[in-house]
Length: 113
Length: 113
Image 1 (cartoon, each protein chain N blue to C red):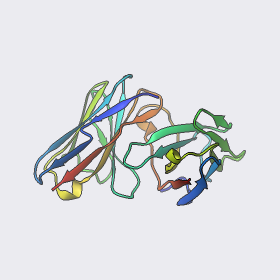
Image 2 (cartoon, helix red, strand yellow; image 1 turned 180 degrees about the vertical axis):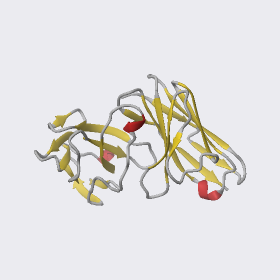
Image 3 (cartoon, chains in turn brown, green; image 1 turned 90 degrees about the vertical axis):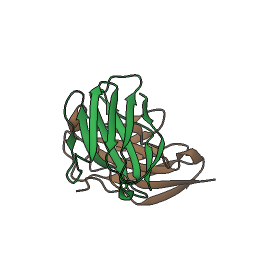
Image 4 (cartoon, chains in turn purple, cyan; image 1 turned 180 degrees about the horizontal axis):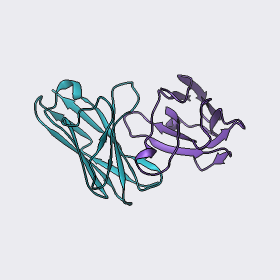
């Protein structure tokens, strides 16, 4: 069963911010929100994760709503190389076999020149 | 982030033969490794989880006698597709975890003719 829902696709202009939404209304209190992306014919790449506070790193920002039922991944200045499928995933444990990731369909982001 | 390699990146084999795919963690010790399969325009599907020195745990519907997984060391896991058939043609991706985050390999494109 899908634990997250994402729109199938979106596009944005190069240089503009890309805001990718994700709904996870059934998230449990001990589940983290993770974002990965997959560029065509490559393995997924970790982007960012968070529990309840907003997070920022060199790639992106993650905004999690106060009720934790949804989140938004923000790429502040999208480039053509950010065109990829972005996966929003929730999971509990961090280590061991329980840390397996369940991928949904993701959202295809197309960055246009 | 940590580096995970896969070899080969592409392989073509004849129906009925076996193919071995290697997954290596290059700069950390991977206590857990995961194997995924991805068909064209589909999401990643987890096949199995392996802990170093233990038998792999297979997901429902994945034949353990067909997809042999060995995780003999903390830096190497192998997936052997035995008696491959054209329907086994897919993109196989491994990921590795040293107790923290999961890092993905670049994937192996298997084509069975």
